Length: 136
Image (cartoon, rainbow, N blue to C red; front, side):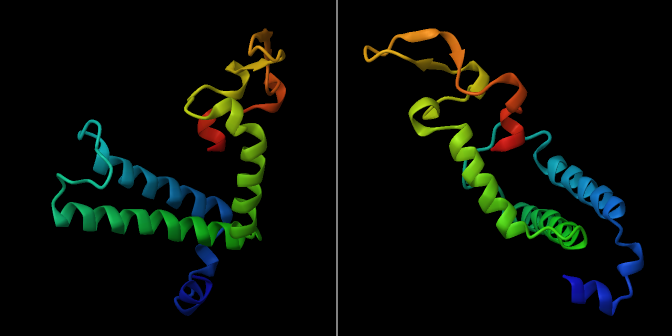
């Protein structure tokens, strides 16, 4: 990605802000593909080949801008993603979260061997949690 931009003398335009705004624009284009389709089953069985190809192009645009942004910001995206998975494993333990879409602040932690609740004490405090969309 860096070499691609360098060959075209685009580094001058690739500030973190500009790349972020371009990324948001591409996410918007990706969203438009799904905008009026309602719920879409996995694998997109009812989609035409052209629609899937367009989806692949927009997903690629998002990925490429994300990779370039992380590079410009000096973030090792692979390491950061692995670290985030480790943090999410702590934030969303399987025993408490399996099969649930609740936020960590909504999960009652059992405190007795009989499985009864501890009266609403949550797995993660409000100050430590973000919405599910921020972490998973």
